[in-house]
Structure formats: structure tokens, C-alpha cells
Amino acid sequence: MPPLIWSNPLKVIIKSLLRRFDIIALKRSTRIYLPEDESYRIAIECCKKSNPVILDGGSHNGSSVDAFRALLPNSELHCFEPDQTFASALLKRFATDRFVHIIDAALGDESGTRLFNINVSRSTNSLLTSAEVLEPNLQELCRTVSQVEVAMITIDEYCSQQQLNQIDIVKLDLQGYDYRALVGARKTLRSTRVVLVEVFFTEIYQGGHLFPDILRLMARYGFKLFTLSGLHYGCNDELLWADAIFVKDKQGLDASVDLD
Image 1 (tube, rainbow, N blue to C red):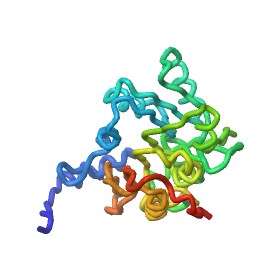
Image 2: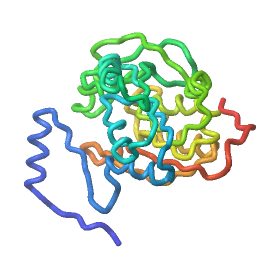
Image 3: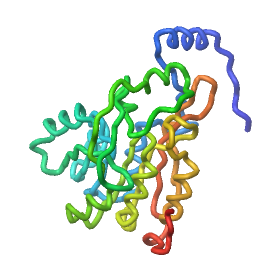
């Protein structure tokens, strides 16, 4: 059945006014697709554990930690955040919580140091440079105001250092660097049940891998796409990004997989 198309002059006027104040109005629909705040619930239900070990890449202001803990009070979280402003606040906030571990580092496909871009909107901070052509409002939010050197580590190396034999849920929100972090999690993902990862459908960050790349990589890792949630659209109806939830499709990772 084709969708109904409604003409609403008031909606057009409101969107026009919002754009004048640099506010991006993103589409959201009920019972057509899943809103972004459902991502954590779905990941937890797919995991089927009451006390999972969760690796949270890109913890930002801690909203993801709050979401997981609200649904699973007995979960253990390992949270990575390279932005020192966010990391310091998280370290202070969870200083007495022995089940929340804050690591002030970025995740990638190798360990070392990297330049990290601090943008006008800190939620868009990334190891990657923003694309040259973006919608005007989004381009301003992604505009880099400073760069800092940060530590970077792979998920596999971190788990080895901490002697973590099991990560049940991997959540990544790395602003275009998610694919590389997944490459650095090859061993860990052998036993992981669910991966929740931000995916892009158009270039927001230069050099960032798009959704088809992550879809192929996860298939090679033995995961299948369960659902997409929180689909975000631009002003011209172009699909920009979403949360992708992958679940383990077969046992382990094929040891013969060549990621080069």
C-alpha cells in the first residue's frame, strides 16, 4: 500500500522558521520506523542476558550509560570517550560505581595516538574530518574549532589487557570511525551476541565507511542485520544516518576472513 502524502502549510512554515535559527528539524514517524531511543531496549532484548558485559564506544555525556543501566541495573559497562570534557565528567560521576569503567581513549583498528577534532557541536567530534559538502546547518555543527591528541586502542587489545573473556553487547557511536573500531574487535566479536552501531548512508565525515561496508563486514563476522532504528533525514529527504542492530547469525568468526 503506498503511503499517504499530506500537505501541511503550517509544517512548512515551522520548518522554515527553525532553519533560520540554525535548528535542524529531522523527521520522526510513529509505527513506521523505530525511534532512536528504542535502540538500547532492542539490543538488550536481543542479548537475552540480565547481567551483560557491555562495551560502550563513544559514551559522550553518559546518556548511553543511563539508558543501559535503566534497563539493566546489573550490567557492567566499559565506556570509551576521547573528549576530555566528557571523559572527566564521566570519571567523576561514576567514581564510586565499580561496574562502570571509564576509559579516556578512542577506539580504532590499531593502538597509538591520533588527532581528535573538537567541533562546534561536541556530539559530532570525530577522529575524521567533516565532509566538505554538507547541509548548511549540519556543516556548522560539524565545524572543527580545535584539535587535540588522544590515545587510541583496539577493542581486542583492551579486552586482552583487562582479561575480559566475554563482551555481550558492543555499542559504537564513533562519528564515522565505527568500521575501523569493528576491524579492531575481530577476536572479541567471536563471542559477542549483539552489536549496536551508528551507520551513515551518505558522507558526513571524510574517509568514513558507509552502511554497505559495515553490513558486509558484519556478515563476514557472522552477524545478521536485525533492524534499523532512529533513521535521520536531511532537509531534502535524503537518508543520513541511523542505528543498526546486528545479532550473531552463526557460531564465531571464520578464522580465514581476510580484512585487508
